[in-house]
Image 1 (cartoon, rainbow, N blue to C red):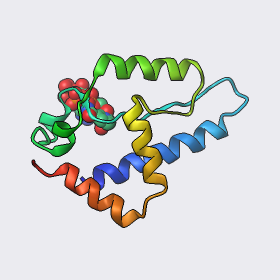
Image 2: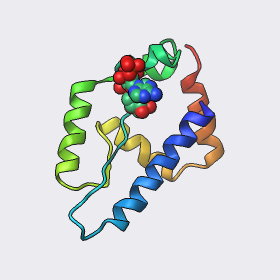
Image 3: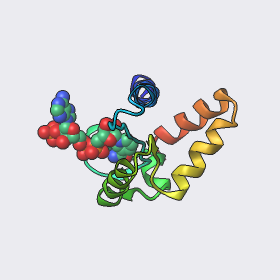
Image 4: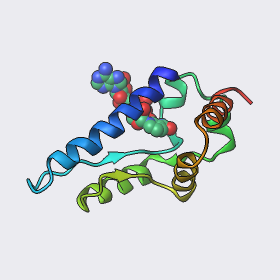
Length: 111
Ligand SMILES: NC(=O)c1ccc[n+]([C@@H]2O[C@H](COP(=O)([O-])OP(=O)(O)OC[C@H]3O[C@@H](n4cnc5c(N)ncnc54)[C@H](OP(=O)(O)O)[C@@H]3O)[C@@H](O)[C@H]2O)c1
């Protein structure tokens, strides 16, 4: 998952940068950053048995999509659906990287 997560980091920072480049043009960019969501993803990614998809209750894909569309309509640059996901991302900001990668690894592993 190292490449997967690093790529997501790139997409987020790139989205924020071009959102700023486009300021004042009437074009907005919104990066939708969901947590675990009930889609075909866990099967395709081989993560059905991971703690991430079993300890946390995945959000419904329709709710995530609705949240993302509303955020886009409001011109928000970053949209994080769900209170637990919001709290998680804030806690990551103030946690040592080494602790974050250790916890993320545990979440990827099977129960
Ligand atoms: N589900 C989660 O928990 C979760 C959490 C955070 C972020 N995300 C991100 O959300 C995005 C959508 O994932 P999802 O959960 O909706 O997964 P999904 O149910 O597996 O859907 C992925 C979709 O992408 C299409 N696709 C895959 N490779 C493609 C390609 N090379 N060209 C064009 N289309 C392609 C698939 O089409 P086919 O069905 O035709 O193959 C499928 O419709 C992904 O970027 C994922 O990383 C998902």
